[in-house]
Amino acid sequence: MQNILVPTDFSNDAYNALYFASTLFKSKACNFYLMNVYNESTPLISRSIDKVNGEVKGLLEQLKDESNEELNHTFHRINLDNKCPKHNYKLISKKMDLIEAISQAIDDYKIDLVVMGNKGKTSALGVFMGSSTTKTMASVKKCPILAIPMNAEFRVPYEIAFATSYKRHYDAEVLDPLRYMANCCGSAIRIVHINEEEHLDKVQESNLKTLRAYLDPIENSVHWMPNFTSKTQAIQVFLEELGIGMLAMVNYEHSFFGNLLHEPIIKKLAFNIDIPILVIPGTK
Image (cartoon, one colour):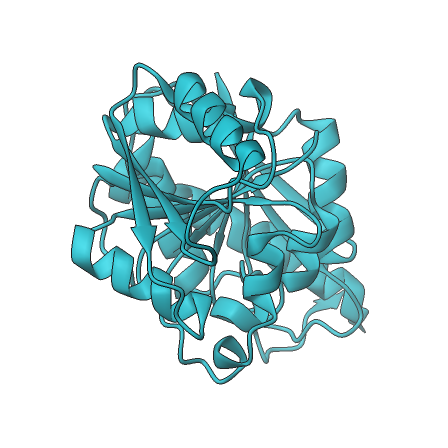
């Protein structure tokens, strides 16, 4: 049974992420935890003034009511749009910071995967792909995060690209989310290395060998990309050429992924990825 956390701000983008995930895992038994957080700076959805016994409700009380009401609306909507007998839903409403709430929910509900859209207040890749969750990626290092592009139409990712420098030794536990996703979707894994040097050193060769051993028997292949001035450009070219349906990376500190987030080209929004991105924690 997979436990999947889906933070939502009730935007179309957040709902699209939920719909995408429920379709992706339609054949799997899953618990979906739909979570909305709010605080004093959260705007009310409704402009009407709520009263109790003639007294105007306080802001936080109104936000709490709206949060619960919209969560129930989302629950009924997903059951109408994509009902699946293997899926259970739990609704969570909290007055809390988003990142703190995600981290706490991961522990409380033994979450296996966090699914987020890439726009709005519950966005998934911050500057990289939307608004706010570069902080989430840095802070929530104990659980994989699947970022779903805005307005993405569902298609099974039969080709998953795994970007790596081969500079770190991967163990089976770190690669489990990638293996699970590939097995779930019947995907091949395309290992992509950006050619920063002409040849791999002994450590990199050993890490590549170990990586492929862990991925076996999943179909996989190794691909070298030229050393573009921008790593983002290199990955974009690779994704387009091979018809990749999902990009996966491991989020180590000072890693390829970490460096990718800080490339100026991303801040200029020139890196427009329109496929899901699976960010895997480097350590548990």
